[in-house]
Length: 114
Length: 113
Image (cartoon, rainbow over the protein chains, first blue to last red):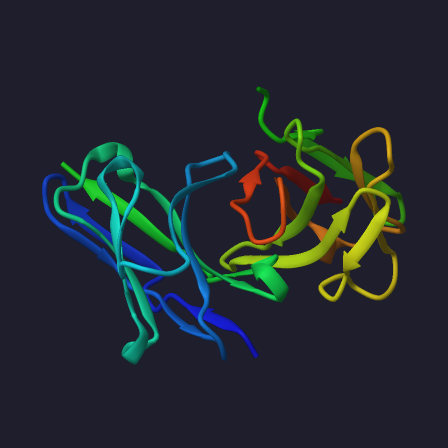
C-alpha cells in the first residue's frame, strides 16, 4: 500500500539557518511526489513537484527537493530560512492511475526562532 | 481567477444534526477531491469526483457520509447524524485533470458539540 512518512513532527531552526525536512514514501511504481505548505488557518499551497527527469527539483520561495529512488526519499531543503517560512509542511505521493489519489504524510511543523 | 472556495469556514453542529460542506472548484476544473485533517494527523483522502460522477470513494466512511458534484453548482460533502469524532478540518481541492497539480481551498472547520 502507498504511504508517506514524515519522521519529524516538529522542527525548530534559527532564522538564516539551513533547513531539511525529511520524507520517505512507499509506492510500487515511479511516484508523483509533492511538497505542500500550509500556513495557519489556510489551505495548502504547492511548493514543488516531481514527476520525472532531473531528480533535483526547484520550487517556489527558495525551496528545493531531491528525489532519491534508492532511499525512497524526497527531502525538502532551503539554504536560509526566513521567519515567514514557519508553517506546516506536507509531503505527498500521487497514487492511483495518473496520481489522482494523493496520499499525504502527517506533516512537519516548522518553527523559526529569531 | 478565483481559487477554490469552501464555505462555510467554520461550522458548528450538535450531535445528530446534518453538516453540509460546499466546495466550488477553480474555473475550468472538473476534478474535485475531499480530504479530512484530524489534529496531529495528516490529510486523509476521502473521495474523488468528476462532474456528476464519483470516481473513488475508498476513503469515505461507509455510513453517514456522502458526496456529490452536480453538473451545476458546487460539490457538496454531506455528513448525516454527526458525532463528536467527525470534528475536523475538511479540505477540498480541485485540478484541471488527472495527475495534475491540486489547488486547495482554505478548508471548513467542523465542530460537533
